[in-house]
Figure (tube, rainbow, N blue to C red):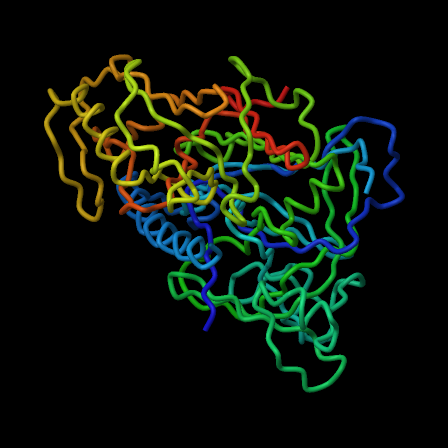
Length: 473
């Protein structure tokens, strides 16, 4: 059985899409500098928790559970692997999933003709985009209604969409191109749809068929557009607890068939997002933009950039870190920790919540930060395998030393202090790092990324970032 990593973390939108011959509908005039945008919402938003709020402690336990599984599978994957763009851009809503009862970021996604709306987790570590789906119901079936719900779950009813076109199982695309997305070899008849069995590290499994579909999205100029022949996964069977309150996954990995790769290629070779604070509610939203950002999101500090190593650690967005400083003092960390050719290296990932550091870096960072919080009473939280938590009553965050991640080209990432001394429960904070046994992949998680604008320039192989409140201009 093949196992596929699903990136489930506090700030993600799960949607896995394969775009085939993607193009913008002729109704869109190509005369403005626009982008496709999607709104981002944190997955702990109320509508994803059935309006049953969960505590910070419960959220943290959930995040850590998925983070640890995710990092293990990422490391396994890593070892196993050892056209003129349009001027328009796609804009999609993006927000924290807090009110959905999950730790990832969520986006709304419209698919089909007429379009049906779903909530997906955004994940830079997943390459398959799929949604909950009913494929075999007939138009006269009362359970196949335009309301899109079966057993109180939102479901895409394929027969109600005139643009739904299954990929045949006998096709070269099914037999060769989609093998990495776990297409199955069964093909009883030439017109049988190409099926998949997508397995996740936590034991969850998504099973269904591949199809080309039409995706509807908003543009930064306020117009609407449609992307045709987008390859999606129509999942008619899902086993496991991972996606209890959302409808699927949006794959943004650095792979041929991810939505990020194909949408960005159509709209200038870039995509960007700004992650609101992971404790934000649904009304604190932002957008993920496919295309040039063009000041859509306001920044509040210097814009910096570093090289994206798109080939160093396949399918992930790797960066060349050379060190970490705390309180203006560079820590003693062996260079092998940052060297991808020696089993180390660093990636930036929206599907992992906390930041993982290989053991030598983890020990150095923790020792440097403990000093600043040592006067506060230590606390042990049940189900939270974080080394250092403390009673934060009377805590002054301004006294936390500045942590800086240094890149080999001179760029520096300076996360906000509350992104690494994180709120874990009422009156409790923890140092927000997890260790990884060396040799290991270090991961800059989405809590560390929050309140920064991140632009992934796939064409220029550059990561651009700047502090931001994530408010749109």
